[in-house]
Amino acid sequence: MASNIASIASVSQTTEQEGKGSLTPLAHGTSLRIEGVSKTFESNGRQVEALRPVDLKIASGEFVCFLGPSGCGKSTLLSIIAGLESASSGTVFANDRAVSGPGTDRILLFQEAALFPWLDVQKNVEFGLRQAGIPARKRAEIAHKFIELVHLKGFERSYSHQLSGGMRQRAAIARALAIDPEVLLMDEPFGALDAFTRDRLHSELESIWSSTQKTILFVTHNVREAVALGDRVVVFAPRPGRIVRDFRIDLPRPRSLEDHNLVDKAAEILEVLRSETEASEQEEHNGTRN
Ligand SMILES: Nc1ncnc2c1ncn2[C@@H]1O[C@H](COP(=O)(O)OP(=O)(O)OP(=O)(O)O)[C@@H](O)[C@H]1O
Image (cartoon, rainbow, N blue to C red; front, side, top):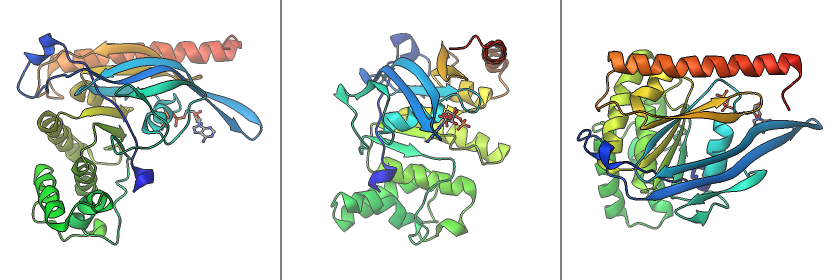
């Protein structure tokens, strides 16, 4: 499990946000600082600049979406925060401690829920607790709580192949939450799901976030998904990957994808994304990009 466990941080919420609705958790200080983090890969003797230096602060309990087209370094940054990939420069601090590898304070979840196929849901959710030496009765109690939270009660004895994609993601979320990380790192977790299931999971994730007060970093290509979920939407542009804007989303929660304010905000962000991507392509074409 250690390799599945990555590390992360948290957010800052303003007092203004605290008053916005019962779904918004309270902030309690900065938990993640990303200072000058960049990444260049060596590939077939070629240097690939995946990410230009990034500076970002995320407060405890904040929900931050990383948005951008394919290849702009979102997953690379998430992996560096998780401690699974090393940065070429700069440092990630989780609760003021420099990240040097994976940790149970930062858990990374992927598009395909990586459940252990030989274990049922209950045993999957208990897995990290067993590794941590938690006694059986306590493990069962904790797993029960999180299985209920993700609405999988009744499926404790089901195996991965007996679950739908959405249920597998719920089980993976329960397994991550069971070990009580401070931060959840979610890399396009709903990307493979149909629109209906994805909508349901948006509202479920919002309420899980609200009740657990975790910091969440959520990678997506989908502008409306980012605006529906995030306190902030951090926009990346490609070639080379870099952050171009950091939008604060002040819309009240719970949010509806049909809400016209949400649709307007998504259109504004999409326009930024479009013009940045076009500018990158133009500069690349002209050979002016360093
Ligand atoms: N291990 C690697 N070796 C070489 N190049 C890599 C490696 N991992 C990523 N890259 C390159 O780094 C750049 C950023 O990739 P990354 O996966 O972080 O982007 P992304 O924004 O998450 O894309 P996607 O949304 O498609 O997952 C891409 O050009 C990619 O080809």
